[in-house]
Amino acid sequence: MSCEKWLHIEAFHVLESLSDSSMIDSYIPEREYPTKQGRCDLYIKTKGTDAWIEFEVVVTNYGAPGKPITQQVQHVVEDARRLRDFIGCEKSWICCWVYPLASDGSNDEDWKAHLDKMKSKGGLTESMVFSIALPKGWSARAYLFRFLSGVDMHVRV
Image (cartoon, rainbow, N blue to C red; front, side):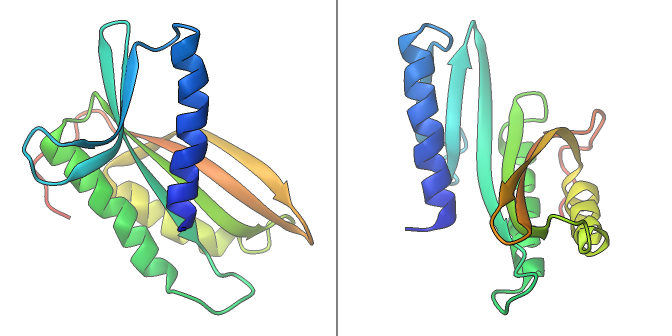
């Protein structure tokens, strides 16, 4: 199972408890876009408002070989394009889990270049960021991105 699918399962577990407590009206995993051009990872309806959320996991591979981070950053940009084109900026979010990052910040500058690329090419801004300590001096960060206001919804990246 991929890291992204595991993130989906964890989110659905939390959403199930929130729907039981009436904090959300409903949620639909893998909901088809209104354009019928693919599926969005998660749709949530609450108090008359709907939100479309794409999940991405970026494995930095700092300290180990692996899939190039640039490909994973491009996936985030592509999700942003789909949300922008098919849903619109006001109702769209991207939840991005990034790991491993050095707890001492020694690769923060390298990561910032990729983060800046995701934000500029995707028209995104950080809405929330939190870090989680991992063993052996590593950490993970979760980012919740919103679209910048005034983003041209028809710009192709």
